[in-house]
Image (cartoon, rainbow, N blue to C red):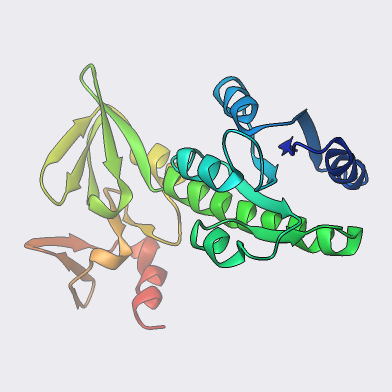
Length: 230
């Protein structure tokens, strides 16, 4: 569900936008306001995903409002009676520029463009969240980037996580980390080792070299060598 704010000093124009939005299940109208200063107040107090914003308004124009909120995580679709501001509007990285009167067909295209942008941004955000893990060493939690992991070695009840710049010794099992790390990037190659596939420098028979470390490939894990031959 996307939270929307409608900002226009003309009540009829606000009604047109709200009527269009009510036909779409994914959108929730948080409020309708008649000026940019009221919009600022809404943005301070509520989570807004998308603003339908008029340009010519008293006290503060829509263009000026966008410049003020450029650091906020909110998208803007301009709704205006004037074509003259289109170039300036798109320089502000708005989603779309709708000229009144706004048909539902044209409105829908703008909204679909917003949804596409929002989904791509969410995918990027999700990917970034999955690019690290937290590792507890003693009583400290370390934020470890997946790209920094070279290999993980079992040492009895402990494991050593070998990173590009340091080692972390953790009371845990390889089995737990085998399930935690993405399989397309990490592989169990021995009962005592998990390796980062992209970090392997040399394959010498049943030995994998990562930097100066030579890691054996166990008999039950020989199929893993096919990863490097495909």
